[in-house]
Every structure is written in C-alpha cells, then in structure tokens.
Length: 251
Image (cartoon, rainbow, N blue to C red; front, side, top):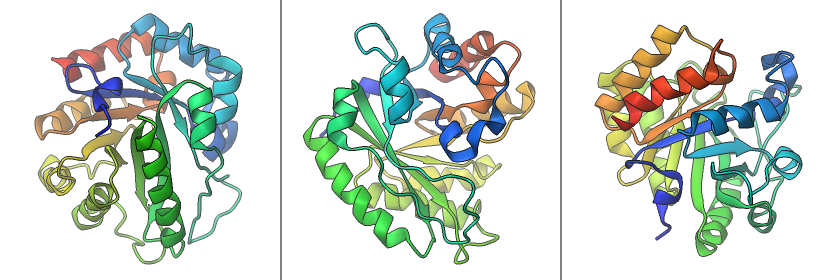
C-alpha cells in the first residue's frame, strides 16, 4: 500500500490548489495571484501545507523539487471551459513517468461522475492508479458529478456518497469532493468512502467566516482534509488565513 503520510501532517491533508487556470482560464486571477510564484510563496511562508497542486507546465517552470519543501501533486487530466458540453470529458494529458520526473509525490485525476463519458475516464483512472501505486505515488481522485444523468442532483447526499464510494472501489487513496453544505448529510459521504480519505474542495470564494465554519464542520465528521485554492490565494492575507485553517485542521 502507498504511504499516504507523504502528503499528511498529524493524519490530515491540507492541499494548496492552483489548477484552476487550466480549467477556468485566468478569470479567477488578479495581477498578483496570476503569478504561480505568488502561490508558491504562500506555501513557503505559511509552512502548513501538505501538498501543492499544479499542472505539468507550471510544475516544469516554477517547482524545483530540490528546493521546495511542500510536496508536489500533479493534476494529470484537464479540459478548458470553452466546451460547455452537458457530458464533459477530461482526457489524460500528463503521464506518471513525467510526474515522477517533475518530482511529484502524488497525482490527481478527475472523473465526471454521471457523464456519458465516465466509463472512458474510469478506464484511464484505473490504469493511472495501478501505475502510480507501483511507483509509490499517492493517488487522488477528483470525483465531480456532472452530466444529464445527475443534473440537479450534483451536490446531494445520494450523489456524493456514490462518488465517494467509487473512490474506494477504484482504489484511490483520497477522493476530492464538494461539500453538501450540511454536516449531517456529508457524514454519510465520508462513511461511504471507507478507508479512502475524503478531501473537501474549497470551491468558489466565500467570506472568511463562512470558509472557516465549513472547515470546522467537516473536521467534526471525520474528513481527511481539504484542497483549497481560491479561498486562500484570493484572500487579503493568504498566509495568515492558511495558518488559521491549519490551526483548526491540525488541532
């Protein structure tokens, strides 16, 4: 079994996500956080993250595994926002071999649960999971419900618990999911994942109070951790907010 502690601290995961530029374009960025170096500096100065998520190109240009202390997580697949398909597909774009060359300790891959193309993504993920685990990499599944088969039910207890269960069934070390917004319903999502740890995505920008309250709620029901992007690097003081989250997360 892969050593999951590679991206854990005090048995929790806290990831700084910066893969949004691929999926959304630069719409989430301002003149500061458009620079990947700005985000790397958040990780360096706060010293609380157990991993930082980049796509291949940013990792190649900005991440030096001989220098950086925060473990690298490479997102292996992606798609642009120009295609407004009801049935999304996100193809593999980076190999395990390349992720290892870049110094990655873990890899991530999105499956759009409910999409007409989910079988293709499941097949890709299964092969990735086998290869990554054989190389000692931690594997994270982004399990995002999308498509007409789950339309209007994307963030429900039933749909997200199914997505969490697929993370377990497919052999992921962690499964990254949106929060239902209610800890009682999300408790079943966490239980459905079994020994696969549930990571809650940060999602769209919230007020600091809302964001920290969500962290507290999720910790109280046993989530493994969080993968946060915009709610950190769009904040007025990303380093201080990172430390506030870490204080809740690590106790």
